Structures are given as C-alpha cells and as structure tokens.
Image 1 (cartoon, one colour):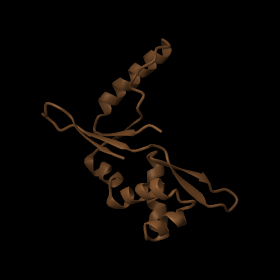
Image 2 (spheres, one colour; image 1 turned 120 degrees about the vertical axis):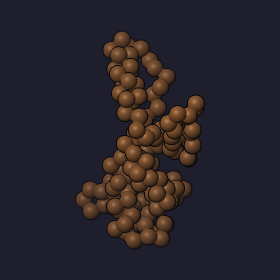
Image 3 (cartoon, one colour; image 1 turned 30 degrees about the vertical axis):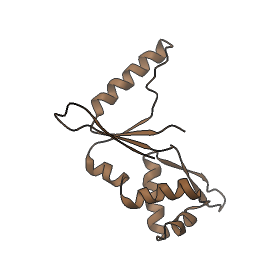
Image 4 (cartoon, helix red, strand yellow; image 1 turned 90 degrees about the vertical axis):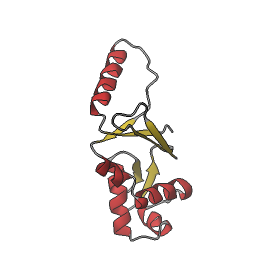
Length: 134
C-alpha cells in the first residue's frame, strides 16, 4: 500500500498536478508522482484527521486488524457510537474503508494506506517542512 500525502491549502498545486496527469494520460506517458494526495482547506480541518482519538484508531486498526467497529471500540476503550462516528469521518476522507456490513454482518475497518505523509509548507519559508506518520 502507498502512503497518503496530506497537505493544507494547496488547491492550486493539486489542480496543476491533476492537469499534468490528465495530459500525460492522454499522451500515454507515465509520471512518477503517482502518490495519492488529500488536501485540507485549513489547519482546523487537518486537526480533525490528526486528533489523538483518530490517530489511536488508525494505530489500533493497523496493529490489531479488528473485525468490526465494536471490536475497534473495545481495543481503544471507547464508546461504540464515538468510534463509529470517527471511523465514518475517516472513511469520508478516504483514509479507511469498510469491508462487509451486509445482511447483519459487522463492518470491518480496513486501512487504505500504509501511513500518512504530512506536508506543511509555511508561508515565506525557503523549504517545506515534512512530517511522516506511519
């Protein structure tokens, strides 16, 4: 699995990257920047992903591979409803997905990526500051 690159406020860069990828695909040219990117509008939006509770959940899923939301809640010793809400948010942004869940079967949370690579460029700085989480 690849790592997910997470950025803040880089909509223009992502638009240019997407345009280059479309042009390359039309010309049947392969690009090296195939890493998936998730961009947040603000640091406040990013902080929801990086909340301690969400990071604990992601770590628990990676380490224990729970078979259900209920089992994930037991691992992190939290209320089922809170864990369900957090996992639904993580699914909405594409960090996890669920397997199963039909016909009364439990939904198993699955990590989509090996880790997160957080890229936080600060205004007026000469270089980007990268923090890798895995």
